[in-house]
Length: 261
Image (cartoon, rainbow, N blue to C red; front, side, top):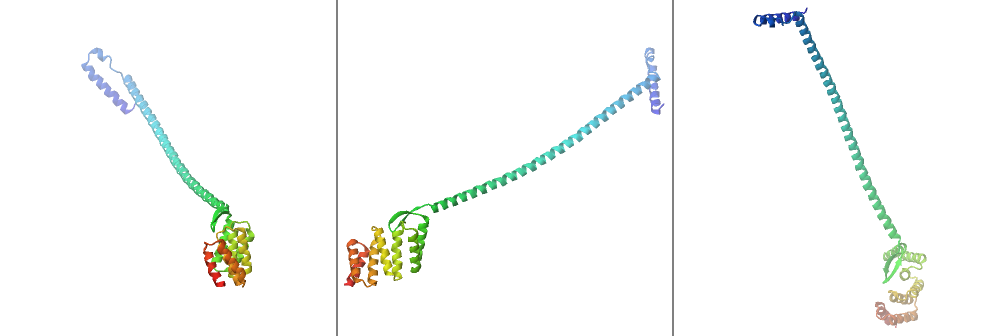
């Protein structure tokens, strides 16, 4: 028998004996025997061990639940981090897409504006030259302005070639009468007087109401003077004074006519 058990039994016996001295005889008969004491101890031990086993089971269960909770928290943290990463990626893609859309819209706007400008540059436009308003194509305006630019530089042979080329390319252009006038002036400057007279007269026939008609008539007279055709020059000057008496060219014609006499 274990020492602790023996000690417990002896202790219970002593307790029972001491109680028997004080208790009535009926109570003494109820005192535990050795077997009953041993049985009580064994029962107590079993209850203790059962409680211990229950506590250990509860502890294991709590440990397992705690470990499971930690794993769940770790999984949750991983999921949150993955969501944050995905959100950042999607935000970056969204920002990149926004930049690409903005750049596409900018390019489309630029292309649309460029296309509109090209279309406008190809469309006929109203122009006013020498007091005459008419519709001209961009090519007409470009070539006429280019020829005038050459004339203003004083390169009269090149200007003559430019106006001749314009006249061949655009014979029905609203610029044509003005082109003939300036072609005649370029030819006068290069002393091609006969051709100058021809082109001045073509301008007068084509556009008798042109603002430069008085100047063209005066230019014809000047060419005739250079050709020593004084009679024709005098007649031309007289026609100018009669047809356009208020013009500056008519005043110049009077001065020239006086010298011819």
